[in-house]
Length: 219
Image 1: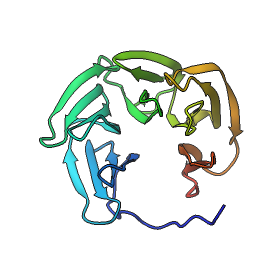
Image 2: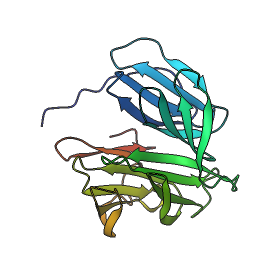
Image 3: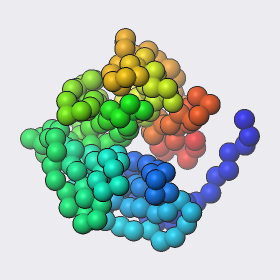
């Protein structure tokens, strides 16, 4: 494996950055400032950062088609009109609980959306990880303090996730057709006592997992 190249993509300062996601159809990278309720975008090839005010905390994006996006927010999944920016609630997630919000989330290769939640003040065990697919919503894991590291293998047969507060990165088999867990999660990495805290992760095309360690200034 060649040495990775690290460079600054955007020097825009977020109060709490989250959820970078690339849309190859438009060559655009999207990400969020959770606390300020902003969706940001910038072409991967370069250019200015566009800032969209969402009016609520949000943390993850999924492309529906060239006209619509699905946004994970503190009240649930909203369909966003790309042209107008209008947000319409599609599926409520913990909308009746003002103390929680969405956090790390990711789309499975089959199109299922795993959505993590957590307490706004990082209250212990206040969050969960949900599965959303073809209009159906299920809670997969509960008693999560800080949901993070949701990612999948390219063929959709493996999922990873963490509760950052535990220091344990988990691995579980996955049904490639539905994105549902298959079996019980097992510890993949025990990071307890090491530098930083397990935050966002991604699996590359070679099956290598990359993790950004919050508070550790290291990948």
